[in-house]
Image 1 (tube, rainbow, N blue to C red):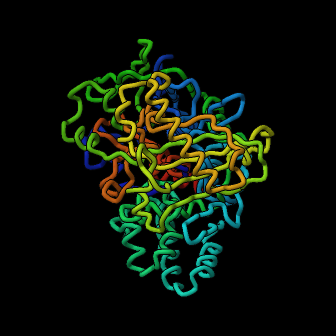
Image 2 (image 1 turned 135 degrees about the vertical axis):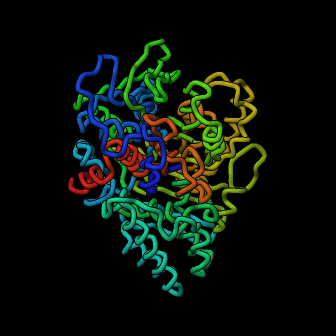
Image 3 (image 1 turned 90 degrees about the vertical axis):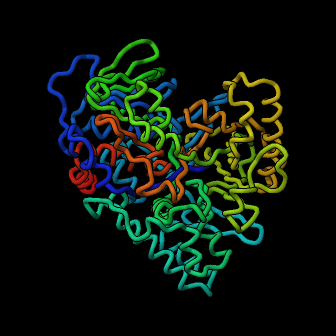
Length: 534
C-alpha cells in the first residue's frame, strides 16, 4: 500500500523514568572520547528511513555511528529494483509534508538533505483521486481547499465537515513531532477514539465518510479500528504538499547515506546481524554473519521488533515482555503488480484509489485478492515514472491490492526464486487479475500493458523480514495505539526500537519515530527545539 504518515507518542512513557536506575535520562548520553576501531557510540540495525534518520541525527551530534544493512543496497523500502534498466519502486510511492513549511521539510532541512533532493509536486487540485461505484472525489492540497471541495460536494453537511477538519487540525497542533509547538507530546482527548466512531458521531452520510476515509490505505486499517489521531496526522501530512522525488526513493536513501558518511558515520551493506551479545544487563556487541563482532554503547533496531528479540540470548528478557511483543498483531499484506506501457497519455501526477463499495470497513473484509475470491477489489494505482523528469523510457504503472497472508501461507517454507511451479501458476493467475483490474480502471491502458513482476506477501516478508509480509509492520489499530503501542524504549537499557512498528508507516511517520528514539538519548526538548529552529 502507499506509504506516508506522521504520528505522536507519549514522551513521558518513552523516557523510562519509571524503570531501572541504569536507564539513561534523556540528554545524559554523550559521545565517547576514545573508542576502539571496532566500537561505536551507536549501532543501528537496518537502513530503512527510520534507521538512516536516527543514524544521521546522532552523527550530526558528534556520535560515532554504524548502520548495518543485510541487503546489498541501503534504504529498506525506499530503494528501487530494475528490470531492463526500468526502475520500479518497492515501497516509496509518494510523500507529504514537503511544502514550504511542511513537517517533513523541517526534518529534512535539519538533517541537511532537503536541498539535495528535487521534489515533483503532484496535482494540487487532486493529488489523490478516490473512485467509488457511484462517485469520485479529488483530494486537493491544503485543509482550506479540502474543506471547500467537501462543502461543494456535500453542501448539506457543513457542520460535520467543519467539525471533522477542526478536530483533525487540533490533533496535529497538539503533536510536537508534527507541529513543533510543545516540548512534550502527550496523549490527548482523542487517544481512544476511532475514526469510524468519530465520523458516526458527526452523523456523516456514507458518501461523505468514504470521501474523508479513502486514503486509509496509507496506514492500512479500516475506519472502525483506525485511531482518529493516526488518521488526522496522516491526512495532515499529505495535505502539506504531496510530492514525488526525482530519482524516486533511491534518491532519498542516497542523500541520507551520503550525509551520514559526510558526518563520519559508517553504512555497511550485505551485513546481516545474527545475534546481540549481552554484558552486565546491556547489549555489548552485534555479531555479524561473517563472525565479526562490532561493539557499541547503544543499539537502535530499525528491524521488526519480533525479529530483534530473536537476536538476543534466551532468558535475558522477562517472559511477560517477550509475550507482549510476540502478541502484537501484524498489519495488512498486499499483492503488487508492476507494469510498463509506451502509452504516455494516461494519468500523470496523481494516484488513484479504487473501491468497490463506500463501506470501507467491508473493503478490508472482502475486497481482497486471493485464489477463488471473486468480485471487484480495492486497489491503489500509481504512475511513479512521471515523477522523475530524468526518465524517458517506458512508463511504469504500479498496482497494489489488499491480500490476506493466508492466501500464500502454504508456500511460507519456501524462499524467493525457489517457490515451485504451483506458486508461479498462482502468481500468474493473480497477475492476470491485477492487469484486468488496471485496464478496467483506466480503459486507455487496455491492451497496452506489459506485466513485468508480481509480488506477494512472501516477497515482502523475505526482503524486509516483516512477519506475515505485513507492509506496515504491526497493525496500527486502536487497540495497539497510544498507551497500547510498542514503545521505542525496550526493557534492555541500551536497546531501542525505531521505525514504522513504533509509530506509523511512511516517510514522515518513520522520520518522526527516529527523532523520538534519538530524543531518548539527546533529550526531547533539546532535539525538537533544534528542529523547530532549523
